[in-house]
Image 1 (cartoon, one colour):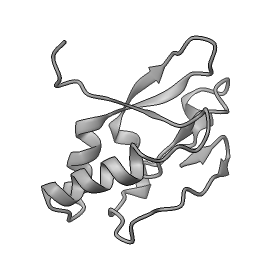
Image 2 (cartoon, rainbow, N blue to C red):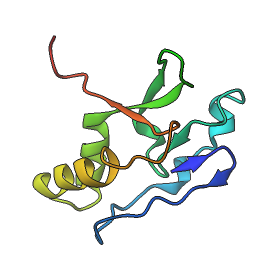
Image 3 (cartoon, helix red, strand yellow):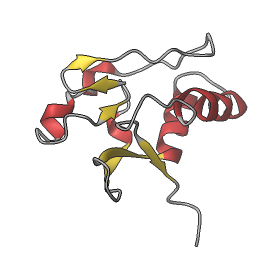
Image 4 (cartoon, one colour):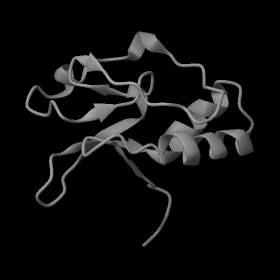
Length: 109
């Protein structure tokens, strides 16, 4: 994940990592120069759906959960591996208040 223009490492708790398309990677400043605390996942810009506003907190990048999982599968993981990787390494990675959120657009209220 990146914070502003500086990279911030997230320790992966699993050895397997998805193939990422770095050609679509954009700096967070391109998305909005006023949201420098927000972090994003390298190689997953095509899964960004917007910004999440939270009371008394900085805005953070919002990802479509299912687009992220589908991208992991396209990178060579099985469905089960992609789900495990997502829940453990992406959803489960807390790297501060700028940590992205994941929106489930398929789940009905």
